[in-house]
Length: 329
Length: 167
Image 1: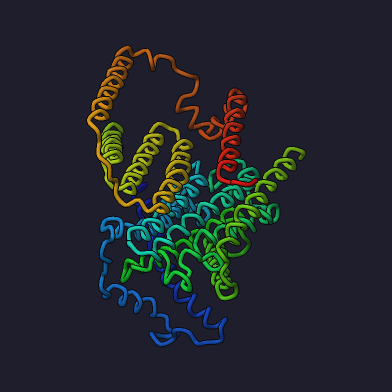
Image 2: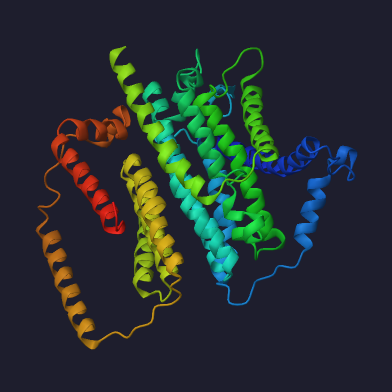
């Protein structure tokens, strides 16, 4: 095979692997969440379909696919159909810049386990996460329903507020690594992980990504007690499923990014790099599920207060202190 | 290949910009504008300016347009109603023709792109686009950069003063 064809084949293989693994993982994360929540609440959870209920995601998929595809009267047809995809695609696109293992030696060449090692990788992630808002916003707006619209407006306001603290909490990692390239950031953590130097930035990033994927305690865009189901109230069948899966893809991707920025990426002793990356990412997924089983929902003003008056100033002070220390060193 | 790619992106950009001003629904206009920004970001990437591309999407498509969409949704403007007066059509087309004439005149003189700077794509690939922009902003253009940040601060304070009745 010529080198260019081999290059393309390797890239396609990596993309196919990511799609397959992330989508399967997202489906099983839904199942894992139901089982873990049941365990936390002293229930049994779904255990009927297959051994230990392991075929439950498949059953859910069949159910979603065979449901009626309903569009409410007065809805904006194009945007209504487009919005679920706009919510799910940026999430999975972000995975392109995450290095999920040490470079491999294949066919006599070095293959990085990363689809695109962009030199603005971190900005690529921030840009895509700011684009992901549109799925939520337009889905609710196009539904032509009060509850959906309220959910969308809440979602927009929340994501704008938390994007700022998320971006600012990543600045110290860039200062330590001296690069926006994600493989460089992982490489700089070979000895000591950045969570040791930057515990505050890690905490801010963790809270911000919880808000970013709209999980309890930050799930006010879909607060079911007040807004029926928030921005996806009017969606049914696989379109609802796409919103739903998008949320779980987001959990996996954001967990992977937290691993990359603060927990040393694929670095770790004994186990192979890919296994380390998976373990750390799944630990974040478990943490999010655990949080859902433990915490109550924040009120709207508390959420805004936390984002603008606590996290953002803290992140700014953290950047200042890190800068001073780096200068004096 | 590169020219072909440029043609496609440029065609989408022009089409989307036309849609921005012809759509009746403000949300559709806003979405077309976002599409235009994406095309511009793609052009920046082909011009060896990845930092500009990322910032274009992050700031324009991801922050400014989100705020515009937010306001449209909050006010719940469904469709634009309002007649165009014949005066505005006349003056608009006159100004448009004048600008077009100016542009053609400038491009034909061809002295616009005569001077070349010291930075080329080889240097960008070696040092990095982000590093080059950062260095230029914080050394050669420090004063304009700081003045801009003070202007933005003034605008923020102004916005707070205007919206709050009692401070």
